[in-house]
Amino acid sequence: MVSEADATPEMTAKPAEKQHASFFRQSGWLMFANVASGALMYGVHFFSKVIPESEYSIFGALLALTMCIPIMPLQMVFAQQTATALATGRQKQLSGMFRRAWLGVTLLWGVGALIMWFAQDQLIARWQLSNPAALWITLLVILASAWLPMFLGLLQGKQDFFTFGWTMIINGIGRVGTGAIIVFVLGGYAAGIMVGAFLGLAFATALAIWQSRDIWGGPSGPFDTVALLKQIAPLLLGFGACQFLMAADTMFVKAYLPEDSQCYVAAGTLSRALVWAVGPLTAVMFPRIVASAARSEKSNLFGLTLACTAALAIMGVVCLWLLGSWVVGIMAKPSYVEVTTQILPWYAGAMVPLCLANVLASNLLGKSQFAVVIPMVLLAIAYGVTLTFVHGSFVQVLQLLGAFNLGLLAICAWFTFRRRPGA
Image (cartoon, rainbow, N blue to C red; front, side):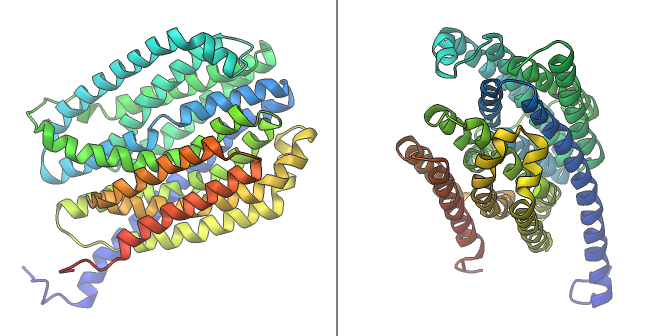
């Protein structure tokens, strides 16, 4: 046995080199899967060329509604719990906890469906839905959107990134494939595209359920509910704040600035692609940070992830600034190009601090440094309140988005790099 003090630089470098090689290999695969999935999902926006502009605007609003489901928080919660359980030998407690959470999420969705039943007339009028069925199809999309991240969290936590990547690709294939059949063959509009979104999610969820059955299907054991909630609640709130800052603006625009909102949807789709493009780096980093914290091991993956994320995000935003009008011209009707191109630089620029904040937040929450959560949540609340009263134009909304994302980055950076007593 060689002690840490007796270890040579060559001996300590080898595990780090192996860890970095694995990190880049897994991140590379997830990036490929993310790009493939994103390209496929982005394909549904080409339907804007053949459906009325009002229908595309409705689709954008419904899609934004599903994006406010806490997908990121749910996935990260179960990734954290899975990585911790596997590192500490608590698989039975994880199985019991997951099945109970699965039932709880489903029951909560049932309550939401009941509320929607009573509020459907107001929602249909508010969003000017031409086909009321779109609302109920969206409800099914929400259920699948709540289930999928739970099982993706299990795959991420046990570092099964191969299946994780294929799940995303299958989701994209199902979404654009069935959507194309419904739009081009059956003549469907927003409701039909949402049917494609549901089927894509359903196929992906089925794969994730099957490949993670060794975790959720195992024998259950008792667990401390109070202690578990103390771990889960900060993760839900922290990652929920990040997701709200990423997705909420589209719903406010649809409600308060309906004219040309389809152009805003197009710009948002392109700009949020930056977040999805660099997401695999954080997805690979997070369970490793959790496992290292559970075993009291040191890891330098955080700095590597932050540097790579910054480089890729800046490259992506420069490409959108330079090629934005060309990309918009390919994906949308000519009538979209002028307005979308005007707001695209603002939108893309606002996403860069969010990309970096996601890395910092994942590192903090992965190490259970939950002091950052309350400031993050207060910032998200302030953002929602501000948008309610300040929404004079698309550019003003995006300026607010950029300012609050910078605020989120500043909060996460302060908690990450501050000097703590005894450190």
